[in-house]
Length: 361
Ligand code: DAH
Image (cartoon, rainbow, N blue to C red; front, top):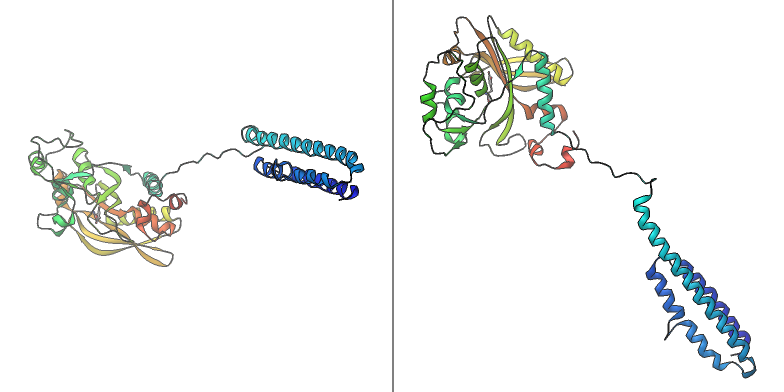
């Protein structure tokens, strides 16, 4: 190997080593380049050093001097790259804390469940029509869920297979939720009755009609929104727990025209368009006459729920005089209303707790 070749090799090695060190963006890449050029056993600098022996004797001092210069330069290039990589890492780390130009970490805002939102809105609409919200317990006795509502023992709605009866020890003198002394004389001794009555998860919010009338003299103008329970198989339109809105208005000379007006105003407010309401004859033990109410929306008749004039037997059961007072009641499914308005096709979505569904509301 002549001197010119040797020097050319050294120049090439220096150039390649510099660009390899400059290109290394992290410690691992830099270490790879270090081994390639400065490696103690097989580094390229080591290889070139071996070629020194093949250089002619008289050229050795010049070759050796240049070799040492190049070695120093390669080592310097490595040291510089090492420093650069180390300081870059540090900037990246501290930058993640200190770079004020980065967007902030977004707070994930929670929101109300679509059914809760619906309930709030229904309360708001009915509130403007003069109805105040009333609550009742979800664990009920048969008096409030059936008997006071004129549903006799042989009625199919009382079938144990249609209800969630609770198996509980019957404590004597069982406390009655919401008990209040300011009520008129009922026809049946409810205290005695309730202590013997089995308990069940209420199957309808109509129970609250009774609870309100027990504690209040007419006029009555309430709504009650809450959960009801029925042992139904879950499918796209059924779920063993769902929500109802019950309405009750008792006063002198209340007619079905009042009922229809209230339902129509309600539907128009909720759906945002002029919604027509129609009545189809039906039967409920606690109303007479009873109707199924439908609403006409987007060119379709949609079932709204049940309604009717409160049956005189119900008024009598809680101690109102049916010769003086009359009223209407209605009960509708809240899920169904919410599903209609938002185009939801499967009731089970409400209860899956999938944030991708819930965050759309
Ligand atoms: N409670 C009935 C049900 O769950 C719905 C209903 C019908 C409620 C007629 C009423 C009514 O207040 O008047 O199927």
